[in-house]
Image 1 (cartoon, rainbow, N blue to C red):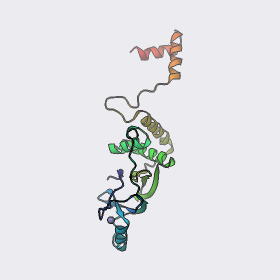
Image 2 (image 1 turned 180 degrees about the vertical axis):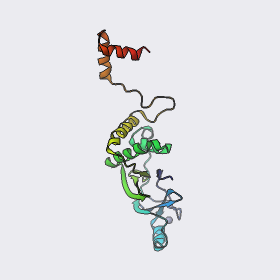
Image 3 (image 1 turned 30 degrees about the horizontal axis):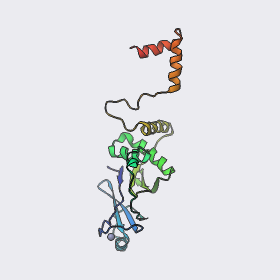
Image 4 (image 1 turned 45 degrees about the vertical axis):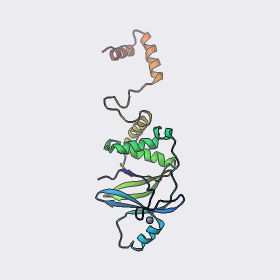
Length: 209
Ligand SMILES: [Zn+2]
């Protein structure tokens, strides 16, 4: 089941294929078909047509109205910048369950910064799925609630901080990279000078295998 995905806002009406104009009102319908969330953006006229038959049409589970904004030209550095939003996209593109918890924490962070807005909470076989909208572009992210326990939270936050700092793991390289604590390093090198210190022995065992 693909309940974890990103879908961009359409630039044309799904039904009549007219291009949305800047400032135009449009409607987003979120459907669920064959285990996948499917997004459809339609213009006001088509929505009115669709709404007339709404009692028979139950193929969407969520709907909201938006105002189409022409996308601003994106500066190239913004695409490369590994910020929280870029990281969330990358994590979701991996489709790796390993990052589900981290993705959820990132989404919560971005929601606090008002980068993402919760549009809907869907109950999916007892689990909760959040439908987030990226305020800037109207893209939607469906992210299941991983039901993190308090004791897991800290570990996931550490993981997210490491991802923000180092990016995704590279095959064959340790991840997260071994921590470099400048203060600790100084302490260790100071201790190295005292020959009889037990910590010195431990440090030497580590450095001379
Ligand atoms: Zn239309």
